[in-house]
Image (cartoon, rainbow, N blue to C red; front, side, top):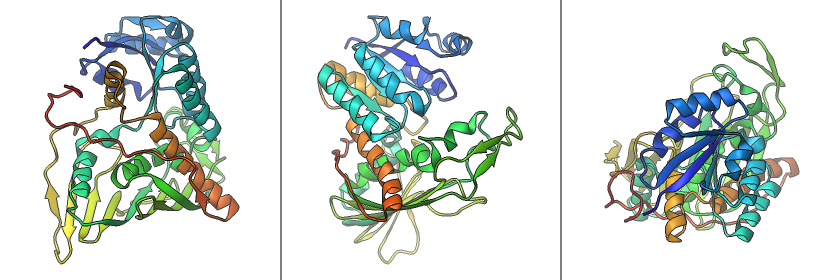
Length: 368
């Protein structure tokens, strides 16, 4: 199968793992990278054997490149997505798809009009951990799912991230930062969301950076830093979710649990690819650990673009799709809208749960 040449825009902290894993998938050829800081792009190109260092404009103009991986900051996601599509490129973007629903819809509509594909992180649901949990749900190990909980309890990022300002600006906050992992996993396990209710708040009006680069600088908080919500899934299950940067201590709450008519399933951290996956059936006092399915249990960011590249070549649907990402984006805004307006939000979008990965293929091969 002919390789798909890839250009990466944005050479920041997350880019390294994408670059490393692009080399592992035979379907991908990492052809170029670009960054607003050219020195940073050149450094990554040398480290990861990328033959071309471009400006963004040069990368989008290169006819060799079929697929753009957009790793810019959230505020730039929609603009770069649209520029790539206008240049005739398929595009895969780090989460979220866009900052606003209007921008997200414009990206999807542009792609459809041009016959191009849009994909979006997170792709962690393709890891062995959540794929194993999905297998247990589908085979009815815990009976019919009736409820779920999801908790992302954090003190925020200013104590470790070198440039944490954008986490507290529009498009940031705990729901937009980490919500995509949790909501995407829940849609994979329980199907699309029908309605949402939410309450939001913020513990602090500003944050003090304690990481080394900008130690002592103040960051204004312009978004909610604690978001609590309820979800009604189309298949009937009811979910509870909390994402927070206002937890100033260690929490022992589980990441995700699914409650069925015959037991409980403990789902691993959706920001990882591995396990453990545990279940406890009705009447049992101890958890049982389910062996992980063969597959991707280490950090395999880049599997989403690889799956998309196979879809480009074969015409099949790709799993980390723009439609899935938009459904999650709408849900994230729905929590905020519900809180602001004091009423339930009825989802307008939907998305099929992605198909499980095949189990009978060699590593780093996603189609036969």
